[in-house]
Image (cartoon, rainbow, N blue to C red):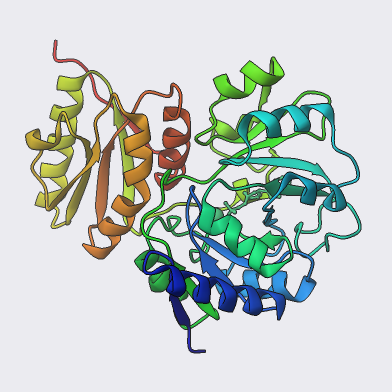
Length: 355
Ligand code: AMP
Ligand code: MG
């Protein structure tokens, strides 16, 4: 298939033409990758079972891993769900448009293919004006998981989308680099207490400020074991994974630097190509084939923004093993560490102080 590219950052006429073309493709049942403020999404008509199936096929994604449905205005929520609980109204008022996805009981309008066979549906109203313009141009809600091959790090730049999906989908819209860099926060509103299923830029503190106490799904912090049944089906699959083996290293600053350099030297002696994911504060202290700086430790939003591109860069540089500094789990740091843990398959090394 020949993929058409459309530019959203050029002239106004160019942008409008690209959006109109993309809207037509979506209405006709085709697939369009587009920027949102979180990551690039792979869009299809959310009301069409056939479009959902095309999305799963293009991504190589298991079809029991449901898609998030994107809308452009709050009023578009009503036909997609059986009820709008008070909590959903409050969250929408506080965080929509924005990087928050709500799980609600689905209506008949949403095909089971879109919801991965579930009775519930995930809905988001994105902040990115290009994303909303595309949904309006389509005239239908747009189902859009991240626009990557299943299992690879999510795309934060258009070249990542082209790498994974070029030649497999109808159109790719180029809106430049995304703002947040991590997928949306997912909160399940179908139980008696709201439950956080996936951390993102809308932090637990922000959710609790609106809803009071929320629950944390156990899979957020622990590796998944066969007896656990995750509420977000996507959680059972390997995610965000670079091709290399990856280890997270935590401890005091000096101990972490020493541990990572020692591990890197040993791996090199074994003939391995070594990558290090470092904070700006420590990057100069490392020695390896690829030392990539994620940002300042005190700025988790910066680290969130750079993480997925850095994981892809490690793939491009063909490293065999990656050592990454662990970061504090406060605020957006929770989402950063959630993705890093998955990328590393929860492999941790604890750096000990020298006695
Ligand atoms: P992605 O858009 O690729 O980041 O994946 C969407 C995520 O939303 C997946 O992890 C899904 O498991 C989750 N999700 C979507 N719909 C539901 C739902 N109805 N219930 C629980 N989780 C959902
Ligand atoms: Mg994804």
